[in-house]
Amino acid sequence: MSVSPAKSAPQAIVLDGRFVRLEPFHARHAADLFAVSTMPGGAERYRWLFSHAPTSLAEMETRIVDANAGADRYVAVIDKASGKAVGQQAWMRIAPQHASIEIGGVYWGLPMARSPLATEALFLFARHAFDDLGYRRFEWKCNNNNEPSKAAALRFGFQYEGLFRQDLIIKGESRDTAWFSIIDSEWPAIRAEYERWLAPDNFDAAGMQKSKLVTR
Image (cartoon, rainbow, N blue to C red):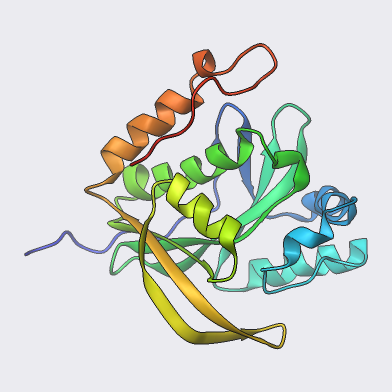
């Protein structure tokens, strides 16, 4: 089967939604991200990440500099209601020649919990990958022991592909990596469900969902 030519890599642009705005990583995000990371319960959300919670604002600033110098492309997740950065995520395994890309480096802080923010942050990445850049494959990977992450992947519409045993050593522990993906033929139906779920009429006056996201 013939396939289309190589695509472009994601550029440093803003992706704007109803609840969140994704901005290229910048020093101005450091104070907000440090505050979210060190609030009560914030550090625990680093359990499955490659890094620990930052211990100082200077460390958070250095992380942003280092991230921008690497091959991955990080963004800050901005809560449009408050104007503050409440999380981060990144384009990883960027392979324009294969039209394949991963969302990774995800830290969605406690202010994003039980809200539409995380769902829309994921949706903006997926929509940009498939609709704007023309990619064929969008990946999600996590530690196989991270049950919430695996459940989130399935809720978001990813399909489980398999387990890479003893794939990595993270924080001194062996990691088996669970792989998930969405491919371009699946995306139109998944996109329609995201658009339905994110629509204003799916939320009540308190901002609570009226119906669940159902991607399969």
